[in-house]
Length: 414
Ligand code: AMP
Ligand code: MG
Image (cartoon, rainbow, N blue to C red):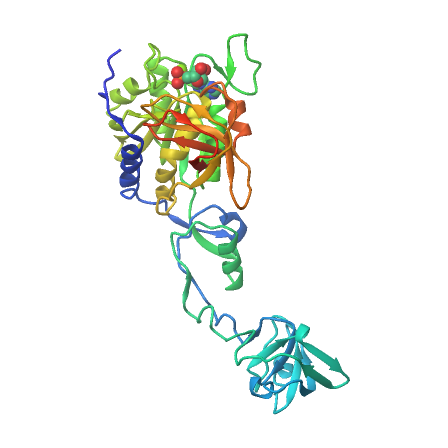
């Protein structure tokens, strides 16, 4: 078969760079105000500002006694306890001043009273009636977080373009923002192709399989902050494919699965080319996922990026993570996030062939000192059951064949 798009096979690194370079040219979706918890996983479209100093008062970092460090130099130091301040104490309470040879009982998070410049941990004291004996020296400033040490009123505390996770939610809550501006989820059309596919709500015939890729892709899209729109399955028929493709190109990004290999009925590239597609690459020297296609179509005064992902379920998942993710990041308003690679110790030997960068489903054992990893037993890139048992991919460089137990390998977290 002749492929109208020509043959642009890139190495893994070249393909990834191509995607990242293209991603930075894309405009993010428009901002909208959203409730704080609905913003999780989306990208901040405004800078978050501190509405006051953080902490707003000198904050005790320990339960104990607020003292003047100068009074606690000779031991044991006996101080008179003149009051107690708990977290949330009123301004009047905190107005209790600490004078010479005095102490005030204080709880973590409470405002340190005037006069005091340190907090002695309760563990280092004895108390009897109104007297506190301090058994260890304390330095000025110890266990006290000065007002404004974490942020000053008006400071940018989280920058626009940051992906919103729980710590960003905490900051937004702390600066009093029940609603924040985020980029709306980019619409991502998901179009599975193949005569053998049936919808998951229908019973498959003996030679049919259920369309799982549309769902795995939709799940990956949603988790990456996109809004998946699952289109009906396209038969391996050029006219039907063209019709559904046009529909998919209305979205901010179009993801196709299947139909990009060298088979007689792999029509995706041909049909995309007939719609005037520009192809950035039509393959990457990886396994699984070699036939992956990346390009864009300009139509109706709108240019839509697309990926043709190979139909084998593990190939679809891997190529999403490797190549689609940066484009989705950009459309969602953030810089492309780096791939989460780490090193681990191989627990059992294995052999592969040279020539491709491989991403083989693996299982990390989660040990702290020396993380171990092993291959998940699999039947190749169609084995979606194996993918569900894996929590990473073991990355095999194209020049490596034989791996021994105990050697350090690179792992991509999935
Ligand atoms: P293709 O890339 O179209 O040649 O498909 C490769 C393999 O992936 C074939 O065995 C297909 O049956 C399988 N496959 C393709 N599309 C899907 C899908 N949407 N869900 C599950 N498996 C699929
Ligand atoms: Mg197919």
